[in-house]
Length: 293
Image 1 (cartoon, one colour):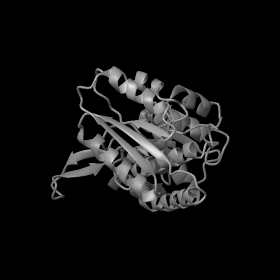
Image 2 (spheres, helix red, strand yellow):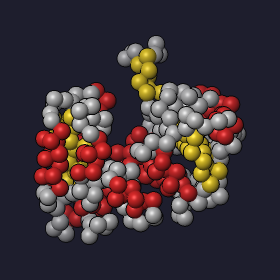
Image 3 (cartoon, one colour):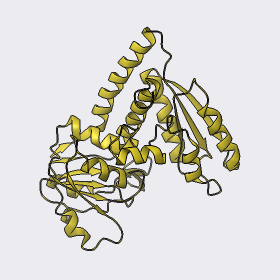
């Protein structure tokens, strides 16, 4: 069993991005600038935003951090997005999800200029990805693809099962794994809450990608010996093993599944670190006008 080390890969990619930024600045171009809008004070979101801002600094990006109270109106957020859309100093924009219930996530996503949508959630980017056209890829699926590529994991002709059908992870990774590319060319099955014989379907997977949002849902009897297991889940669970009283767990019961796997992502230290890095890769592409001139 080999651990897919998100920390190792993310450090490699950070160095590559930083080198490109140095070359841009040396040639007289401005530094890439990522704007992050956060609404409210939800703990996990605040931690994630802080990590994004910190990583921006590490690779030499500028960042614009915008924080609204949970009581902010939907229109005020939309007006800010429209202003950023026309700001030439800002290359990429993300709005941290989830949002308070009185703000429409779909309206927010569709208001972002697709050329600055480095989260890859805008319908234009989603549609272009589905058609195999150049676009900003959603960061978590892009991070999974990057891991598979850097570990030279064979995907061609493999049976890939994706557990979960969200627009953020499940659906886009199923498209990326089935496209004519490397990594790609897999035969993909998407499983969800209505899937019959779920254990049997998962146990046929050469590559099992788990993004179901339930802690330790996948157990050893659901995994084929020698399978590649990608765990996208992250949950803060009570624990007597740590000083904090909490421990991060994934959607996969790691201790059971790891011995059966050929490769597996740990939680933490796996896919989560790759998500932020791929967000920065998209921002670099935006600054360089490589997707949308």
